[in-house]
Image 1 (cartoon, helix red, strand yellow):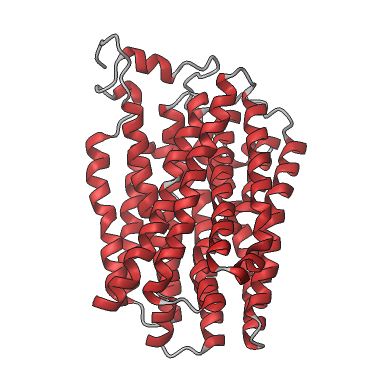
Image 2 (tube, one colour):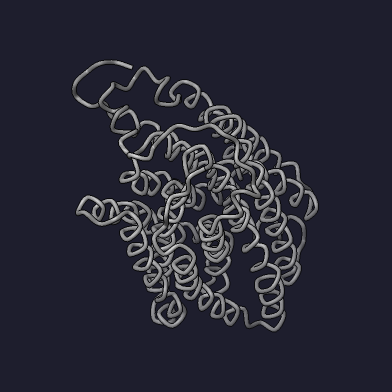
Length: 434
């Protein structure tokens, strides 16, 4: 730790590394949604088989992700951020490449299970690193920035994956995108260390990072049962349960919506899909900026966080008009879906930050993992009860637009319901003493 009087800003280098990892994480999971028509052609699936098989593959990922989230959080709290994040990224990169060996629905389901379990490590590790490197007032902004990596991954995917599939074959789309994770591993080991071991920061930045009064280091192990006894854990878990599935719906089904509603496929789907995630990137960063501004203006942390989240919940509501607007011009639908995706990312930046608002650093990854598991369970439930049954049924009677109309209503309601339940459970987001 150097002794310069001007405060260093190494914490933003750490934020950049987490952003890069999150970009890779979402790039790897988004690839298959863009290869859906190529896989249907390669394996001779008709429309009904395509909807059913894709739903099964998606559900396999979500089940593995939900289970992986629970154990990933615990493992990262035990191993520490540096080693835990590296193991997770290395393994999910291998899993992404292994998709190229699949020869049907079963093979893809196995590959998605491996990917889901290992990708679950990203957010527990990212939230833990953010809690280690940022004071409370900057955490939502830092989370918003690294979380925007999910949008960048989703932007890169439609701009590259269909082109790779058409030029080199669908297998290479998995191989080339999966290999990027190994580049990140080199950078991670070169640049990451916890603040008290990092020589690139000075005392001024170290003191700033640890400026929260209640920010005391503690490494006592906390059981899942203990964490589940707190309303704070359940508030985060319920919020994730209701809203995570909506983001996964955008991620896995947006290319299909553009195909079924407007006839876009192959490289033609790239620009509107990328546009949705460009807009959502703005929401992710802006979503972290607003509560920071309110806190700097003297608002209590809980009030700034909740007010921001309520605003973002209302911003999702216009998505119910997506198809009506799209009947006038496709780009109107793209814009309103982009607004909803941006609101989700703004919401996500803040709901993740509630963990470090309400829990000490040594428990953040475990609580994030518990919430992530509930988010995965919500995604599974949505797929089983809504997408798998409803989408297959409406596809079979050539009315798939009706299924999307119902889904957009579900999207609009999820965040307001999540906000109300969280508010009832933790009105002032009181911090837990462990």
